[in-house]
Amino acid sequence: MRLICALLVIAALASPAWAQNRNCNRIAGFEEKTACYLEQQVVPIVNDILVILDKGPRYLAKRLPAMQAMGDPGAQMDLVKLGDFSVSVGLISGVYRDFNDIGEDFQKMPKTLPDPVPIPAAMIGVRAAVTPDLEVALRYGFFPEFQAESQGYLIRGTTSIYGARGRFRALRGGGAVPTLVSVADVSYFTGSMDIGRNFTFDLGNTREMLGDENARLLNEAINQELGERVLEGAEPIDVGLFFKGAPIMGWDIYQLSLEQRAVWDVSWWQPYLGLGLDLAGGHVDSGIRGFNADIRAIGPNKILEAAKRHDKRPSLVDIFPDHNVTWESVAPRSVSGRAIAGMEFNMGQAMRLALEAQFDFASYSGIGGFALRYAHR
Image (cartoon, rainbow, N blue to C red; front, top):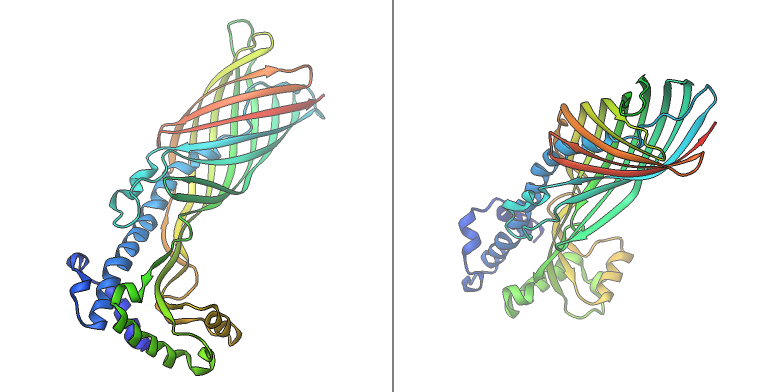
């Protein structure tokens, strides 16, 4: 029975597209009817997961570097001597468009994915003065696990960004003449994202799919497979067809960013504009976490508990191993430019509030953030 079921599912995964249009209820044979059902239910899900695995890393590889380029928001340099430092806390987020383009080729899942999709990160930064015109800074951005639910999908992920930068005041401005601040930044961005609700599907039970007589035959086969010891005292059971696999994308991106910012000092308000150039490397991968397809016994709790006690899953066949599988690896886009706009507000001698927005030319992505900075002089 195990071999028969395995061959049925494997054949279904490789079935031609025309098989999905057949009426399974008109097929008399048990094996043929089961294969037909798998062709119409499992194969479209496999297709949809492969679409995510192919398109997902390409989508992220084009957009993620834009987010990591955004460091500690703000352009003004307000530390004046060695020993001065400041601490910033804030929030940044990339906002990525055209995410629902991934679902254009879906066969079973809803084609409308959330769009746009945000990826947030809390940010902590520390700056220190070296000279009146030179500052160095370290920053850490993170989000332990974020979840965004839309259109019936659950987007789940985690991010970590590590960065170091130098800020040099190339020109002291005054009045209408802006202060020019040059920035060099190196950063490392790692994280992961999976889409869906772990992609666990209960495709239906055999009584509805195959009819009473075929369901009885399959139940008898299950009894033989699991053994009387496991099923002792249990009622007749049913089986379900299950497909499980969580498509996941993970990334490790390294980047050098160069910026030129111009900031005007207007009393308690300092607006600024800038341009950035990013050079990125690394990889964005896709894979499946816990990928498996099986025909599993469902029914009275007695059966499930007995199977657990005997360290045997209530399953007839596992077509795929229950472990992580890497599918695709894509290099991030290598070069891009950014437009930068922001403003800072003086909140007393030691406190500043910075708001910043950026636009990435390669991916047409927006990045926004804010930070509250305390300076010790």
